[in-house]
Length: 471
Image (cartoon, rainbow, N blue to C red):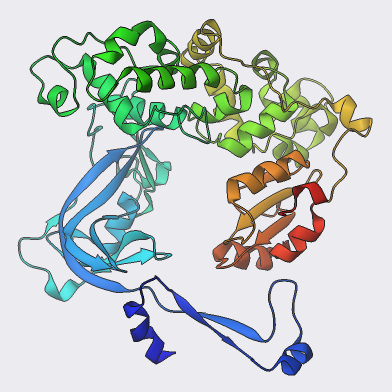
């Protein structure tokens, strides 16, 4: 294994470990298999390759929910076969804990052989010119107000900065947030608008820049192009009104523009789950959006639901007095919905859905002809009548981890949800089944520690109906 640790870097393909196995078939039969793997083989994963380089700068990037993430700019280094100039610093609390400073010699490696991140500092090589990294006091993009989460990470409130995990811009008009939200909204797993990718969003939004702004020319916006509004989800569905202006943009010929507009028209019928997932609402990913769409037939019924109806797990653990105080009646578990939201997240989601900004968004989307009903909805009466899918996944919370030989993760998630499962992204005490493929990592360890049932791919194939098994 030591020899291969060196030799593997000369192979024309990437490797991250070896499998040691018993070759003799008779011994393999004697050793047998577990539910997850054969006893006659074991995988050994090599430590990730680690290199040193110099930290030159830190970029403060703003995401779709306003989260500000520090990103390292480094002297170029070859890491796991590729040239790397940037790496994640995770958050400002981690920078403080590791005492990372500008000008430091840092150690970097690739998490899972994919994502470069800063491991730490080579303290012995620190020079006298090393500068502390100061988290932005205001948004680096719009100069808006920044909030620190959780509160114990806010030094202004007597907290310790080492506990800071999230620093967030709370300005809803922040241009960086708007850009990221639009790109997310148009993404394949959300509204799936072919042709409205990052470069197209940037080019269209550049039409609103001043004529003397150099970014106009950089992004291929001619002087004669008028402003094409693209600041809101509804603006996407009104781009058809600006076809002539779109045609003036560089690299936007008739075929490309017409394909874009056709993709936008098709997206109007995606339904409630895709719209909710695409809006970038905090705590509402695609799984939670689908869970909401399964229990509410349309947006109107979702907006009519009181907050306590959205948090089944928290409601289940409340005392009868607390339930009555919250609901105003002797509500039972039958009165709440399986949304996947908890006692901390449901109020945040409920408040957003009823905010003036969200109400305005829903109104404008409806005026554009966007379908806000749910094709995933299944009434409680139909479930009681036995119309729920008869499968081992019905009502189960399932988590996927590792690489599966026969399935792509998004496609498998959709299959499991069609069979009555709720697919979650993380393991908890509420997880019923973990499906573990190759290179399963921390999720598998956590599932085993919690006593969660673990299936390998063979067990999954046995449980799936024939029509959902690969041919």
